[in-house]
Amino acid sequence: MKKYHFKIENDTYDWPNQIITGAEVRGVGPGIPESMDLFIKRKGKAGVLVANTDKFDLDEPGIEKFYAQDASSEAGEA
Image (cartoon, rainbow, N blue to C red; front, side, top):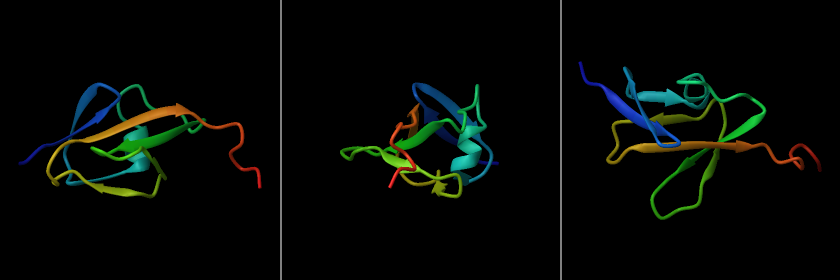
Protein backbone atom coordinates (compact mmCIF):
# COMPACT_ATOMS: atom_id res chain seq x y z
CA MET A 1 0.00 0.00 0.00
CA LYS A 2 1.40 3.35 -1.04
CA LYS A 3 2.03 5.99 1.59
CA TYR A 4 1.71 9.67 0.87
CA HIS A 5 3.63 12.46 2.52
CA PHE A 6 3.12 16.11 3.29
CA LYS A 7 4.67 18.73 5.53
CA ILE A 8 3.32 21.01 8.22
CA GLU A 9 5.91 23.68 8.93
CA ASN A 10 9.15 21.61 8.84
CA ASP A 11 7.70 18.27 9.99
CA THR A 12 6.92 15.51 7.48
CA TYR A 13 3.87 13.30 8.01
CA ASP A 14 2.68 10.08 6.36
CA TRP A 15 -0.90 9.86 5.14
CA PRO A 16 -2.65 6.63 4.05
CA ASN A 17 -4.84 8.23 1.36
CA GLN A 18 -4.09 10.05 -1.88
CA ILE A 19 -6.47 12.90 -0.98
CA ILE A 20 -6.32 15.00 2.19
CA THR A 21 -8.64 17.82 3.21
CA GLY A 22 -7.83 21.03 5.02
CA ALA A 23 -9.71 19.74 8.08
CA GLU A 24 -7.62 16.54 8.08
CA VAL A 25 -4.38 18.55 7.84
CA ARG A 26 -5.51 20.56 10.89
CA GLY A 27 -5.90 17.32 12.88
CA VAL A 28 -2.44 15.89 12.22
CA GLY A 29 0.44 16.10 14.69
CA PRO A 30 -0.06 18.64 17.45
CA GLY A 31 -2.99 20.00 15.46
CA ILE A 32 -3.81 23.46 14.16
CA PRO A 33 -6.59 25.26 16.04
CA GLU A 34 -9.46 26.93 14.19
CA SER A 35 -8.18 30.24 15.60
CA MET A 36 -5.25 29.99 13.18
CA ASP A 37 -5.31 30.24 9.40
CA LEU A 38 -3.94 27.29 7.41
CA PHE A 39 -2.02 27.93 4.19
CA ILE A 40 -0.43 25.79 1.49
CA LYS A 41 2.88 26.87 -0.04
CA ARG A 42 3.63 25.92 -3.61
CA LYS A 43 7.01 26.46 -5.21
CA GLY A 44 7.39 29.90 -6.70
CA LYS A 45 3.97 31.08 -5.49
CA ALA A 46 2.61 32.92 -2.47
CA GLY A 47 0.87 30.93 0.24
CA VAL A 48 -2.82 30.19 -0.42
CA LEU A 49 -5.41 30.12 2.36
CA VAL A 50 -6.80 26.59 2.89
CA ALA A 51 -10.45 25.97 3.82
CA ASN A 52 -11.42 22.86 5.80
CA THR A 53 -13.27 21.54 2.75
CA ASP A 54 -10.37 22.04 0.30
CA LYS A 55 -8.93 18.78 -1.06
CA PHE A 56 -5.32 18.13 -2.04
CA ASP A 57 -3.93 15.32 -4.18
CA LEU A 58 -0.79 14.03 -2.44
CA ASP A 59 0.18 11.94 -5.47
CA GLU A 60 1.19 14.96 -7.54
CA PRO A 61 4.94 15.61 -8.00
CA GLY A 62 6.67 17.23 -5.04
CA ILE A 63 5.49 17.39 -1.45
CA GLU A 64 2.64 19.57 -0.21
CA LYS A 65 3.81 22.08 2.40
CA PHE A 66 1.30 23.53 4.84
CA TYR A 67 1.84 26.20 7.46
CA ALA A 68 -0.29 28.07 9.97
CA GLN A 69 -0.30 31.61 11.24
CA ASP A 70 -2.49 33.61 13.55
CA ALA A 71 -5.76 34.57 11.90
CA SER A 72 -5.87 38.23 10.89
CA SER A 73 -7.78 40.44 13.30
CA GLU A 74 -9.44 41.87 10.20
CA ALA A 75 -10.96 38.54 9.21
CA GLY A 76 -14.72 38.67 9.00
CA GLU A 77 -14.88 42.45 8.72
CA ALA A 78 -16.53 43.88 5.63
